[in-house]
Length: 555
Image 1 (cartoon, rainbow, N blue to C red):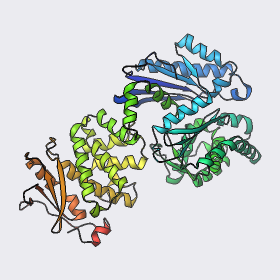
Image 2: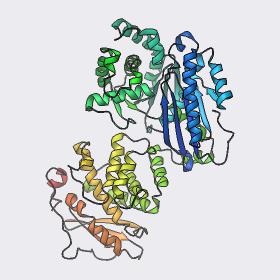
Image 3: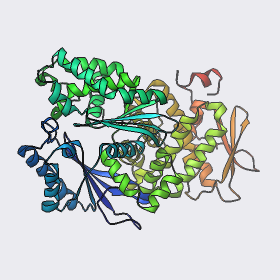
Image 4: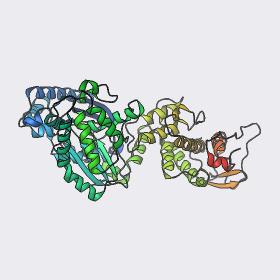
């Protein structure tokens, strides 16, 4: 268990910082602790000090490395304290662990900064990496293999769902490999061949273990793997994506990228889109090593994970508090847990829960009409829970604010970038202008997903209308066929639902555009029809919903 505080029980702190003293860089994250022991990252800082350059071969830290590292550590400690973080959890990995004078660095941090630094073993480092990854990527029903490529070591962890089966820490970091094998610019073929052969030999036992369990997912964390993912995405799309979490790096793209990296000098590599220039000397070893891992693990793609060691340190600390442990046990699904935490963070309240309940019931009751599956159902529910978070910014245009907050949230975890944007788009279109295939908010999504999101928006708009008063008047709904469309009967337990009926009729236009006529009535009363002069259904645009178009459900 890591150091950092005498707290064992009771309430967790309000802010906590984690500092990772690595072989390539020193990183810090500062987090605000939320209810249920959850947290959101509020600040990140990084300096590429290169503690491992030369150290991992010679076995000791040079005076220059010590001064550079201590300077960064001093600045980060001051920053964390200024932001009110307490405790500051600091760990050191292979460069300090292996250096003969690593203890001097740790002692100086304590004497001059009052900062206790834990020097963790390779296996403890692997465990903490796994903690971070499993709280960021959805491992349900998977047998993931998690890889972390640092400057001094590589951690490989195999799990079944949330349980570790085996883990290894190997002396294969990119700084170590670069110092040992690469001296030419660009690297010679003989240097790359020697590096590749060495990596395969060192990783052979891990590959053998992995093949016995047959991983279904490869997950990559750490700066090197994230940087390669960003570069491959830029290679395909011409620009670096704004978020990398859950983004897929394909082996075929990695091979193409590796060829470009190895064929260029450091100066030429610096111009590659997406490359962190501070990694220009290390990225050749990183690309070759990553390709070896892909091939040895027999995986065709890897999911990038932005959470790793530092977040694992914070999670390990928060696990000491009862409310955190209870929350994780009660809500093991990280996606749902993070959505619920965001609703609490932005005080969405009972209305969001009511809209989500009605949206899911309407979705289920009309499944033979829209024919969407469980992935769409989950996206709809999550969007309903989050559709009003923008009210914390402003009531005016709050649906636009909701889209922005969801798109850039540090709280939401376990979603692919496309899923996050889908939830954000649904929140955007829960009111206001109707979505179209040509809407800018949908422009970067596939045609099939755009069509499904427009259909889900139709359901969300009605569900939101059915709680127009925010008093949870509608307790249940029942959908039946009626004439050219459907009738939605509302169980209000004799409470006044006039406002809900009025709003539902106004916001059912998108549904009718896609799926046909819809009417609303209170249970045990007749269908309510639109008064003369109110809007009527309009034709379905060509190609929007060919299944329902063929069935004549539109008007």
